[in-house]
Image (cartoon, rainbow, N blue to C red):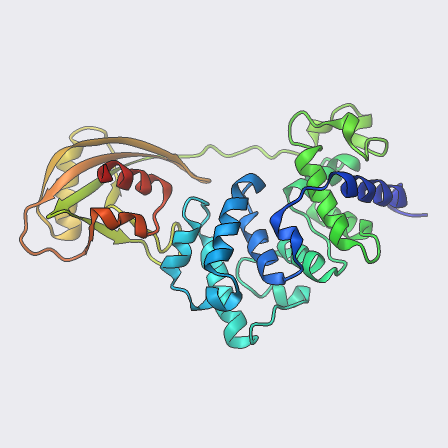
Length: 346
């Protein structure tokens, strides 16, 4: 007896639905693994509608893996600016160098080889293998996990079970359209809230719908409370230039440029606190002029409130990266520091 109920019918119904309703996405018009890889990395943690313009601009700047490998990391980060989760861009850059230096530019076509590359996990590897090489490799992104959890009423977060189901459902020789169909169904029909069950091609086989509680699946873990960080930033100006610092190449927002900033414990006398901090950390005397404003940014693991001040350097010679205000747009920055740059540029 087939351990997957209605396997053949699910395959047929889903593929037929995909032929009529599948999304026309730019990375689906190629079998070249390079642009498919770029798209799959961008789609990690980011919605399709946001990714499309970034994907198109990125490929114009870096049309092949050789262009990407030869590019300076700062240029790659600039092309990525605003897309977030910048480790993805750094991993793309690192992996491109591995392709060129160790693989002669040839893209790996095995799961084991792909998993050795930075930024590629099992689901991303499966997508590349099925979309570029039509290999029978399963995927399990957020959309696919939701569809399978509901169709088979899997109330636990057992990824092992979901991986087995995803793999066993793939029709022989049809992994490319089938995996894309699962992704599209999760994005277009089997949505996290208010799923369009009457329009779903799998509604006859969906156990969660039969239980009249599809939104219960997949099982939702209790989210931890996200800390709120308060910080202060100095826009230090001198002779039409501003002082910037660059974050270390690895870690959170690695390689991006920003205005000097530090966490604060209190909310009083921020100007004096900033002046003393700049003197202590940077060996520079400044005059704190006025507040530029308060900016807020939500990251995946904390919320940030940043108080920003106009400052003036009082020292004749100061070490650091002094950038003309009119050239700030050329450097890669995080969203909140880009807002500061835009405030002082006008």
